[in-house]
Image: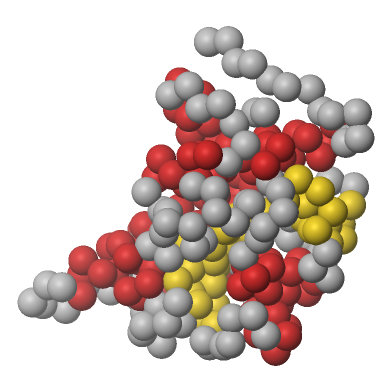
Length: 253
């Protein structure tokens, strides 16, 4: 199928325009997966070659309205450098805090799904009860609830993200951070799946079967190695991107 792709504006590098198209596509994928919460969640990506800047959604746009040119370009001090003009203040706190603390992170995704928010009210919510959980358990960090737009929370989130790329934000939701958009999306997908299975298990009248500790340990080593590979999540990303394109989403503008 033919897809119309706008070239980068004269004032913008091809690398930034490519990142904008990918992030706009990510918002359409999140819309397709049903992870939206009206306007209140956010995904970001660093601008390639400009590690002190990142792109975030223009606050007020529904996810299926977001395009490459509507994204807001910001620096880590909160200055708007281009694109849209409005951004979620709590979103800036979350994303800038992680980017400042984790130079290897280039993409961050934050969600408020029912399963994720449900598990977030439990201090150690995820147990080794499913193969979905084994994808992420070794990478999960539980982050204490803080004041959303404060400098203290910005620093605390960065410290939590240094300990793992799958964060359960207690009393709040989920966050995934990674080196690439495909890898971060796959991280969050598996974290969401683990939370869904955990929520189902907690609604039943009998205790779940726990996976044996030696199997959990072997899975952790395998998943850690998989996440370190550049191709992690790429196949899933490409498949979802094809689906979004088949639906005629016009985000590359």
